[in-house]
Each structure stands twice: as structure tokens, then as C-alpha cells.
Image 1: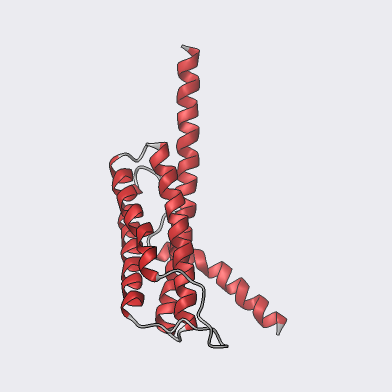
Image 2: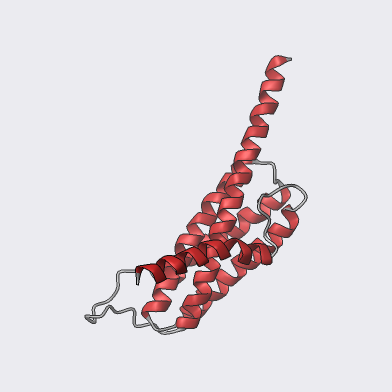
Amino acid sequence: MRLRIGSLLLVTVCCAPLTLAGRGRPEKLTRGNLQNFLLDFSHDINQAGAAFSELTEVKLPLLDEAGHPLGRRRITDRRQVLIDLEQTLKDFTSRPRDLVVTMTLSDQTEELADEVYDLSEIAYDNDMEDLAMQLTGLLDHLNNDSDLISAYALDLAAQKEHELRALEKR
């Protein structure tokens, strides 16, 4: 049994980059691939919004195995992270070299990933397997997006520091 689980994890870890690469995701964000990344990222945000809407419209019992209500926040309360992220994405699109906007985008992407994870658990708890699996796939993409944005922010910070050091030398 352990061998099967280990093999499954190995296949999953090895194939995950292929899945993301097949989707056209870059390994690193640059000025040259930023526009394509932003289009893919907007698609991910739209998918999350659609999932939020689907779960909002469905009457979910949200009960545990003992029949007690689950202690989760209402789904409609979770939409604020989408609204904030959409605004930050617009800001980032117009100012991709703004370090504060980039870090805000990174933080909000991680926050959305947390919400998507929780929503996937809600979907699984309510026997909505298809939606849960879609959300799990979306979570993988958001985690990759977050990693790319964080790396971009670190590169941007290094560039800014280099520029500041050059100014100090003058």
C-alpha cells in the first residue's frame, strides 16, 4: 500500500509541471510573457468567481457527520477577496514595476487560494465531486500563480535595490 501511495505521489509531483507547462504557464515571469500570464491569471480568477456563484446559489446543508452545522463563513462573504484581487490585477497591469502592487497581488492570490481550498472542502463535504475536483485543479493553478508572482516580486525588489545602489554611487 505504501508503495502505491509513494508511486502516486511521485507521478503527481513529476506530472504537475507538465500540466502547467501544457497550459502555457511560464517557469518565470518576465516582461515578455507577462501579458499572457495575466490573461491566464484572469481566467483563474473568473473560474473562482464562477465557483463562488455556483456554491452561493446551491442550498448547502453544511452539516458534519453528526448533523451539527459546520463553522464556516458564508460563501457570499468570500467574494470580497475576488473584488480586491480584480482591482489589484488592474493596478498591476498598468504598473507592473510597482513593488507594493506586486506584493499586494501576491498576498491576495494566496488569500484566494486559501478560499478556493476551503470551498473545495465545502464541495467535497456536500458530495459535489465535480465542482470539488475543478476547485482542486484551480487551487493548483493559483498556487503556481502565487509562486510566479512571488518570484517576480523578489526579482523586482532586487532590481529596485540595484537601482538605488547605483544612485547612491553617483
